[in-house]
Image (cartoon, rainbow, N blue to C red; front, side, top):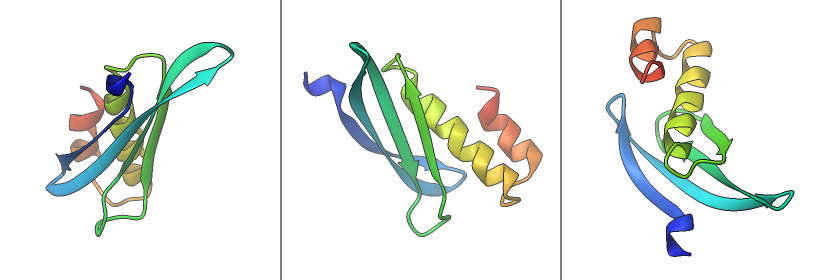
Length: 85
């Protein structure tokens, strides 16, 4: 049960960011919700909801990078490095 939840830090574009993963039951199916934020850098939050525990952090990072790029804070080539992985 402990592995269902998780939180940690990661470096993203030279900034220290935090993320949380929490399980959710939706229509009797297990999902994982990821939330990523970078205190002191930008006001955006990356979020994802997926069935895969191993993929939720990656999807959350992609959502964060997409929001940051669409707002003009990073260039397309910087975003592309993160979005293609």
